Length: 227
Image (tube, rainbow, N blue to C red; front, side, top):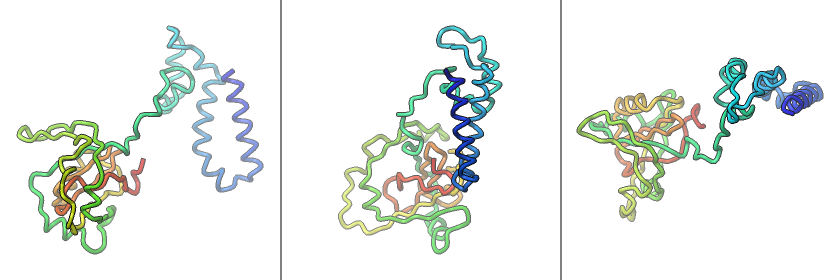
């Protein structure tokens, strides 16, 4: 049963922690273990035994209260909601782009030359490399200007047929270390004089410089916002 599996799991973890003398490796697992223990406690207390999929939701409220903020992530593992589709594309593989109305190339260059500003990372690569990749953008960007519809770019970019021979320019982009909202991303990139921005669906923000022909890099490189 689920209760028996949880009990055996907890006993195994306790034995491993004891044998390892709380080594650094297992200390790093403590947070994960504590979350799993919470789920097992709910199961052992038989607070998640009903099956909503069978029309029985008599324990739903009690199970949700017991799991607390773990409900969204763990309701399927205790049989209380539909299993998640883990084959879905990760958020880091999806992004939304927009061209900015009034870029200031001289400002962007000044801010990205030399040492990178705090909480940012400056990355430069050949424009030819930028154009060698196909876009994989999947959502519409909310229109912020009635005269300028902003949409995610489809698989074959408008620049796909651009002649890259002879291109020696470097495309410079800026990544912010922390996760930000799409509106913050646009605001930050406008304040830097950027020409465009790319907002990854994991909340990583990339400001794109004036030398970039397409929409910068598809790689997520925000130091504190990688997943």
